Length: 283
Ligand code: NAP
Image 1 (tube, rainbow, N blue to C red):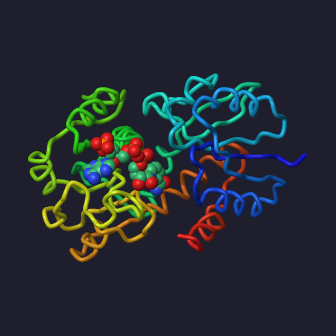
Image 2 (image 1 turned 30 degrees about the vertical axis):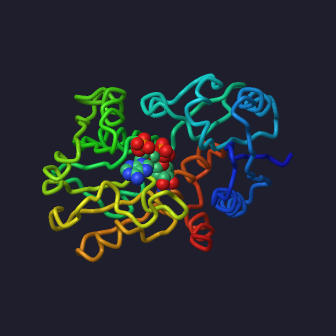
């Protein structure tokens, strides 16, 4: 029986995921497909329940605007999804559905691939949306003190409260700062992550640097990771590279979060190389 995987979104728009997972399934020799499903918010519960009953259902990714709402339609959550408050991956398990957030593991794998080694400094995360929650949680669990800066102070404070502020379980502290505090935190930051939509093609601030951050304030050897993957070289990454800092684009995390999802669905080691080639051909 051919197996089926999906991306649940609204609108489904243009996504690299079908191409990436299609290439992954082919490399694994699986008889499986992956397609985008445009799901109206009011239909989410019905669609998820129907998928859970389908014996051909292999698994799904979930994206805007369903990442939080879908939590009400799963039987169990991984600790990462629970802590972040968002699900991006559905996995059939024991007759029910497990909700995970593979952005957490995907972000950490991308950092490892870029050669990030914690040297005792802290991280600065720009933004307080879904991706920022996943990144701050991941870093905190790795023992990295994390400073979150967002254009709306209340959103950054909410993120800190969600993640437990002084430490997420066994994790390091996550704290929020405003625009003035951001400049103070940059000289001691060994990692800067853009988790806003600023710099994204077609977004409202395509040519901007998020929060007008000055990469000149970062120390030598700092790593700048932009989660935006279209374009691959954002204004922030261009400024980081011009300053001689290590610049990491969002394509790597995209591939690793997809690889983690594929691992959960198939139980097999994901063919990361084939998945990367597929998105690089488009990216
Ligand atoms: P989201 O939940 O909508 O959050 C977007 C964040 O960006 C919010 O904090 C928002 O602030 C902020 N923002 C928007 N415009 C801004 C501006 N002009 N100045 C400052 N802040 C601004 O989106 P998300 O899901 O977290 O995704 C964020 C980015 O990460 C997107 O570009 C997405 O493609 C990327 N991403 C990449 C990967 C990957 O695998 N590489 C994975 C996940 C996400 P407000 O709340 O004030 O609007």
